[in-house]
Amino acid sequence: MIIDPRTPRDDAGEGEQTKPRLFDQAILNHQLSIPPQFIWPEHERPSAEIVPELHFPVIDVAAFLSGDPIAVARTTHLVDEACRKHGFFSVVNHGVDFNLIQKANRCNEYFFDLPDDEKQRAMRKPGELCGYASSFNGRFSSKLPWKETLSFQCSAEESSNLVEEYFPRTLGGEFSTMGKVYQEYCSKMNDLSLTIMEILGRSLGVKQGHFQEMFQGNESIMRLNHYPPCQRPDQTLGTGPHCDPTSLTILHQESINGLQVFIDGEWRSISPNFNEFIVNIGDTFMALSNGIYRSCLHRAVVNKEISRNSLAFFLCPNKDKVVAPPPELVSPDRPRKYPDFKWPMFLQFTQKHYRADTKTLESFANWLINANQSKSG
Image (cartoon, rainbow, N blue to C red):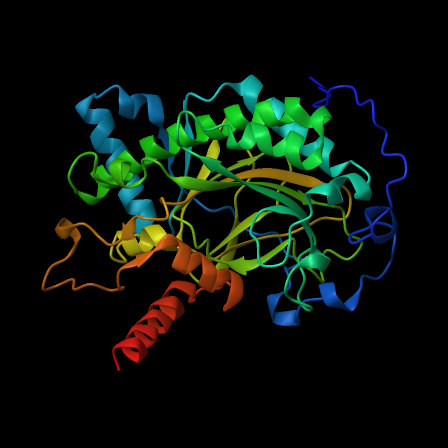
């Protein structure tokens, strides 16, 4: 189903000045070479060999919610095993309407097909997390990712229309339909994330409802990703190797391969399946689990023939919540691994002081300890 996520526009933008083009697909897609800023070191480039598939559990959410003891035990066992090893699993029978998923994907395609001057109405400002971004308006000048993104905040508060209001306010009234689609999508992602938090809590053996309560009133981030075709996919990456600093990521891939996870010394791929969401643990939840569950290195590769789009929901705690593991996960044999912190502190560290990699959380913990010692000294 093809939908036009805009309502008719009666102000065609006469007199508007065209802003500089930042990530001009029409030019870059047909160049035999790519700009040097996009070329990654040889040891970080994707291999030309076929990447083996990652084996991960497929979790039936409806079976878990049924309360059947056998289904609950099986679910928690599979999730616990996966999260101790690499932090990735998928969910099916998740309760998110497939028509809504399809609409969200169509809106994603529609936005990135817009002319540059329209996309740039939502341009992300320096120092901010949300808005439109291409490779050239980040804070780095080398090892740039071959992608465009649109990020926006979403609130779990029932009365919040944050997403619905963002699109017409930022892009114009003709995008109100798109705002409604993503408002509903984010609401469903919030519901699903809280269910997953209960699964994670049960898997870790903590008090029922502990992590759901932790993430009530969350202030999360939704991101639309677009990876255009690239004439030299062997030299660049759509997204470089990183661990998500957030608590949980719920990703929908439409039909094109690109997601890869680093485990046991090699990259493994995760093929798309329209009926499932891919879930992975982020650094903040690794801290909440006292290091028991892993936030794993992953990346996105690009291809020569076709664009790849994805939808990513990043679950983040409310800014006033203290990130600390529950008492059940701390013992003499497993002392505290990370200091207490609040999500805005960690976010600021990743946005202003550090380029995310495998040691982001460890580096943040050391930075925080040193900062606290300086204050007390």
